[in-house]
Image (cartoon, rainbow, N blue to C red; front, top):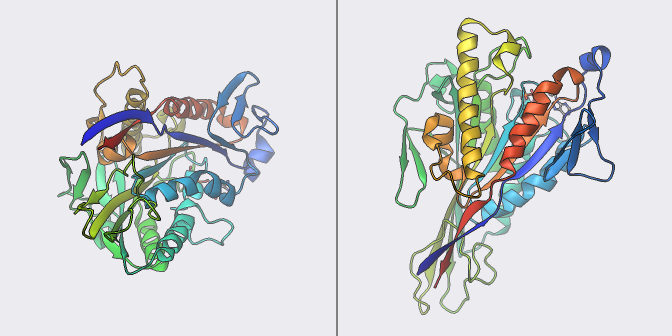
Length: 385
Ligand code: ADP
């Protein structure tokens, strides 16, 4: 079998501008950001700085608009065996946690539910609909927080007491380039309610700290991961590309591990995929937060993780491949997500922004950062017989 590489499946980039807060309505102008009528891809800052993204959501867009347009396609690919990642990026208070639904208020009414709770319900609906004697699945979850380059396992009870730093975590790359985390608690779940329970447990445990910009803003990256293992028994006389969304004749999904491919006997097709939902720490410049002491240390460290992520994105987006080295190892964040940021993975960057003119500098920085991700075209492997 010959392996060919093509450049495709570029990153999707979405920008969401949240509604004005009461405080912003009272005290600040909000004229600098403009949306183009009947154009859902363009956003203009200060009259002349125009950016084009895959999706642009104005303040009137609701949670379902975001979920149905940019997350459902990723969910479908995830169920076909592709690793998927959503990175929520933006300054503190811009709506990352609200959009992702990984906050303390993740138990919200149905209208306000964010991406992760919606995903959890759709995932189990989709998996249960596939149930048959020839199909089985297992769903596992882990929930980590990266704080000052220290990892906290949010599903480990001691993390609640802030003593649960994952000291024995090791990150290993297997022969197929998959990144394996060991020492992280992975819980098996069998229902959406159970998975929601772990989302809430981890959200409560999540470390938060105040800054001048938002009293309860998180100064950490949160990574909520859902791992899906699927098994199909393909009978001898069935063309395994028919009625099976996990494969087609030319392009097998990346985790496809068909055990026996002898056409005269039944064989087992195994798929394994992971979906990382990453609520990144606030991207604001440290000097704006007036942080001192420990808080300043956090700010510097957070920016290191985001800087490393930005460098990985730039290297992946260099189409000429002048940059052959992708600096995944420069931070724990990029190392943990290594196999979900490039290669066969599906990645969405959700850049969140405030509508207020008082935040326009940060908004411009957010759009520039997101714009870099638009250049990325991942390498997809095609197995040719
Ligand atoms: P971040 O995670 O970026 O620090 P949050 O998600 O905590 O920001 O949002 C800050 C505040 O704005 C929260 O009170 C949140 O409920 C509110 N908010 C954010 N985005 C929206 C939105 N699209 N619609 C309504 N409220 C929002």
